[in-house]
Length: 201
Image (cartoon, rainbow, N blue to C red; front, top):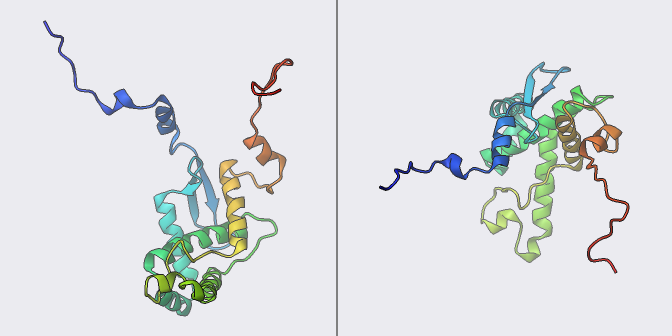
């Protein structure tokens, strides 16, 4: 008599490590509070080092409120809506961290930051015109597109690095070489006194 077999489910094939990740996902949030300006609170997932969906939308909306309408109209002629949204989120998150967490605070004008980004993209397209053109020439369009040509200013990338460390360490404020960051990323390996690499001479 053949034994009845139940159909296999996704759980039968799932990796135990994936189970552990699913259990932890969403449980550790770090709050980024815009204490010196809008007073808004943004949630970042400590596993992904990124904001939740609602906080992402809130950062984009805050950027639209802070960017001068004339600058926004100019950017809309150069970039797609998706590009503006992505860059606004990155610049706004960096701006909130810089003015509310860094000490002393640093003021970042999101609109002017995106203008500088557009200007650098325009210049990059012109400079490589002899080799077939930049992203606009490649698409026969007056609009730039990600990620071929558009790059945010260096200071935004640096502050993003500090922001990610802030999230990863649960809200610790420290420079890149601080002991708290190094301790959080340290791997402790104890080797035997007689250990030698297998491929050594």
